Image (cartoon, rainbow, N blue to C red; front, side, top):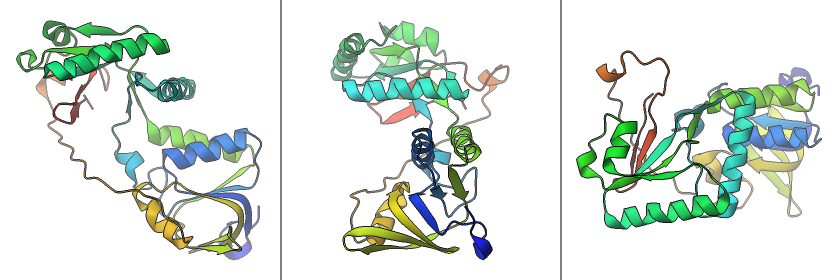
Length: 265
């Protein structure tokens, strides 16, 4: 793909993916694995961290969902991340502060058995304390433990995905390239206009997280996405973890009754 004085930006693409977060990287990667050529991946920010939610995410993966399809998708995602070498298995505990939440965790045991997620276990407060020594077990009724829970280095995963697509000669990546317009003619997308020039495109995919509705409006359509504020509290350095031998030595804790999670970072 040659772009002349456009800094290498192609003038035409079979598919333009807008957004270099984990979704955009994954989409471009899998398209090229399926044999697509002339795929262009754009982001207005720098790489490897363009500044979106992927670079600020918790990055943990819990395996069990009541939906069979979501569980299967999650398990396959973990398999792929392991193959890339970007998955750290830590285990995860979901704790209950109320009888209602404890009943929900019992249902998770049933879902895990139905979808083949093993091993899992229900824990007493003392059992949770054994796995997570810094927890106050007096405020919980128990927990649901999944050893297969872990954390992904999503920025590294994105870099590896882009590298593979580029090595195959099927993907062009353009960082610091902002989309300023999407032209639609006859009910079909025709081109993407950027700060580095226009790209005639057969297919355009918007993977911009909270900015996706803004991009969709450029094409005369709507993506019903509403941003939500997410607070993060950093209490480190923690004396308990001074002798830690790795980034995560204790299971991640999800406390859904307070809409919080805790993880060693």
